[in-house]
Image: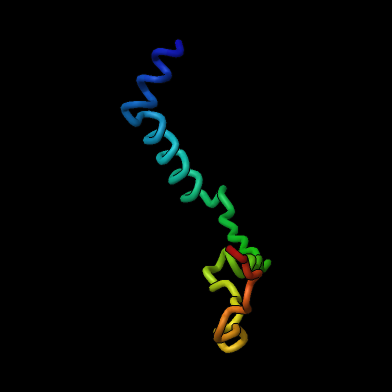
Amino acid sequence: MYGLFRRCQRDGTWHRIFTALQAWADAKELITWDLNADSAIVRAHQHTAGAREKRSSNRNRLAVSPAGRTTTG
């Protein structure tokens, strides 16, 4: 039985039956076609949206690095 079902599924028999029944029911106005739209807004995190990372500007950096510890030889 399963083999017959799969064969009909693969060759498109079930799809044709469903389409024919749907067309028949629609012609008899037995189907109510409703459209639902969701108005919810979902916002992504700024990094998900491709925003650049906020980095400190070069103006805030020292022009010369501070002197480190001196070593004596």
